[in-house]
Image (cartoon, rainbow, N blue to C red; front, side, top):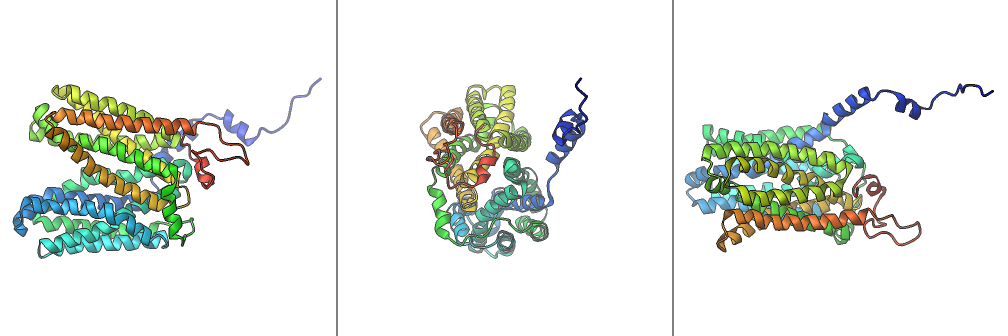
Length: 442
């Protein structure tokens, strides 16, 4: 007769038999929690986003106070963006041999000094020089923040880590810019820059104290940094970013004119709707990060397909106010849900070889996409197709990006090449084990 087994259940078996309520609750709390080092990086990025965007609301005051035309004052915006696009990757390349934490502190110091110079600028030329100086640190600071947050979180949570950093940018639009404009209304445009200086100093101290030393060794080979840009996966990830972002920003650039002139909303209502758009962008960023951790390319493909349908719906139903509000919310969620996945794809494609330069180029590509999106929308209007046609044009590009993402997703689902044979084109042999851990292709 068989005796009952007295074997102790294994730890794995015990965990399977236990109710999952406690574990699920702890898992939920851990997802909500933000590690202190990541919070410090979010604070730094919040300052970056505020300094970059608040200037647009200060243009009338700057024009009057500095005695320049409004168009010349607008160059303070485009000059900053152009510096990020052209100078950002170069600064990243030059500083690639430096340890990350001291570099983060140094870049924040440069950024703080640039905004201090802007607050004290005696004239237009000095203000432009200060903006260029602070913009030089923007791209590299943002890139290293993303890479560092992903390293802290681990490869299986890189999507959520990217999402948290991008939340800092979203919050700068929803909270930072309005606060900066409030300071400017009370004490003049210089007060907005003083606010950024104070915020940057707090972020600098937080980064210096809270961010740990990088576990990744510093590489001295600049050629290796550049060679990562020749990798097919990195190139496709950059192409995907440019096509998707250009389509989305074409629509976003002309969102306010459509809401006013087509949907019929007044200026006050449009302000509330843009605030609602900002809340949707926060929700989209967190949703995109969660899904990127589970199925990176699959979620990107789905988001791009849905975004294409939403942009087409906006083009078709913008004249109906209720429908316009519903589509606006969907647009905000889906457009900003792309950011964590696109960032994680760049990180995953670069692996441990040269993630910072790859992310830096990606950030410059997003800045270029903003300009390309505005240019595309302008050409559509110049051709006489009307405001809603801009959304249809954006949908063409998001559909094209969705096709790229779908092909990359399907390529990643192919079985890995047998040991000793040629590597799959989707997973180059040069990549580290990090790529195999991150769930990118399901």
